[in-house]
Image (cartoon, rainbow, N blue to C red; front, side, top):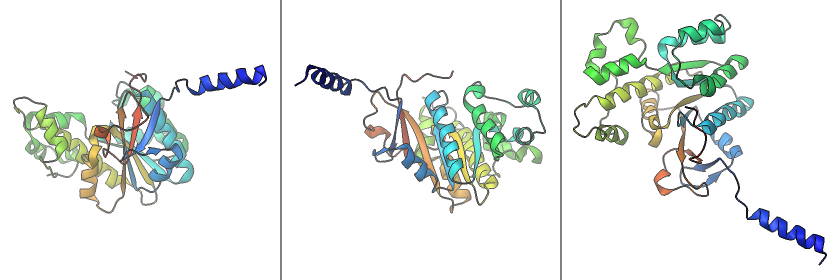
Length: 283
């Protein structure tokens, strides 16, 4: 064999055995690998997509923007996010419509610490493409109030404040595994209001989605994965408020290997994004 071709063959063989630097892999609920094209096709069939994230995962935030861009090419969409609270909706709408400049917007809206790197790109895409963007979350002071005093205290609030949350009294099932798990985090179970504070967020986000969803648009919602894992949280409440909506869920996990989905991560969502644990954190 010609020495040149022998060297080429050995080099290609060596490269084929080299480590592939892959930052993420998408799987189906049962652990089958899913291509990006298959992911987009699956999401496009939904009425609502709940995109569960790790708030500090840079790859997932990049993927969120890519998913939005691709779905926007295929159909009418609208966006919403846990990271914006309902009492800031008027400022968001004014900013998207060009009635509020960026300086005024930045000074009047409560942003998460990673807004500029992780959520601003989504909002700016909505602004550029003239897409609806809904602030879905309950103002945090009301969730804090539930944690301290229980849900009954919400009934005492003025009507204009109750408008920033799901209709009261909102349903609450303490037997949902996610809420039971939260309660277990408190060793002495000294505060049964802990999962209720989570539930008012879940209920309000779900109600906001159902209330604001346009009939001809796919609603893509961004939230922490715990709010929609195992089809609980927001997904459970959407089913309560409108059982006819088809909800597709995404969750995020990290694994040392991206070759297969670990058994403990299966069935968490319709699509499971596995990222390398060394992915850069945004905060």
